[in-house]
Amino acid sequence: MSARQRRTKQRALSESRRRGVVGPEQGNVVRGERLQKVLAAAGVGSRRQCEELIRMGRVEVGRVVASEMGARVDPTGQEIRVDGIPLPRVERVYYAVHKPPGVVTTHRDPSGRPRVIDLVPSAGQRLFPVGRLDLHSEGLILLTNDGELANRLTHPRYQVRKTYRVLVAGRPTPEILEKLRHGVHLAEGVARAQRVQIKAQHGKSTLLEMVLDEGRNREIRRVLARLGHKVLRLMRIAVGPIRLGRLAPGAYRRLSRQEIEAIRQAAARKP
Image (cartoon, rainbow, N blue to C red; front, side):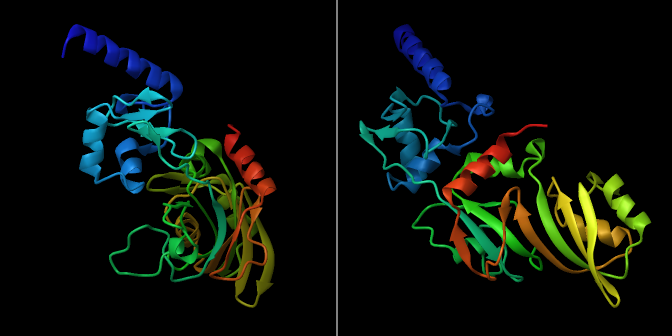
């Protein structure tokens, strides 16, 4: 490569970073999908063919030649061109889904169990579940192709609160409720409820409402088991300002414009 070509490439790289197209070492600028993956998903070619197009300088992001193989882009917010022809813009979609028990929230399941992403029409788009609910839990899951919003909603830094109704065996004492608020030590750190209250008591079981701002794996079940109360049923009823409401198990609905704006604002706030 000549000195002139190196200077041209460096100018293109600098401009790409300024406009939000980044390399692997600058991944904190844009949290998106890898450019070659976006191209492949759009039917441009195989992943390797798309990588070759990038190497040849035939791909532009925001009218700037993409010069970093590991660049991450936002296909819903940035214009991507191949040989001067723009890829079709991806419509951002946002769904509220009532995940029933027995449905997994992962994209791939070797056991072939039903997935929450199969409950909504994807129209070929890759949808991200916002957070997870374990196999036996149920309730509200948000699905979207807005990867940046999904990242913010699940990252502890933004402290987007999730509300749960939890039926437990036994009758938790005020001391147990205080321990839940103060924090319980798990292997990966202290887990605490931002709010917990008793909603009802039925014989030998108690219905709790708990609010958390983190989402460790099986956190509620593990914490309550540590305190001597087995979880009999667990349902998430809200993610930030979005409520499950009367949505039936297995059903879905699109979020309204007001709900989308509200959840974006919740995810934009920093502690």
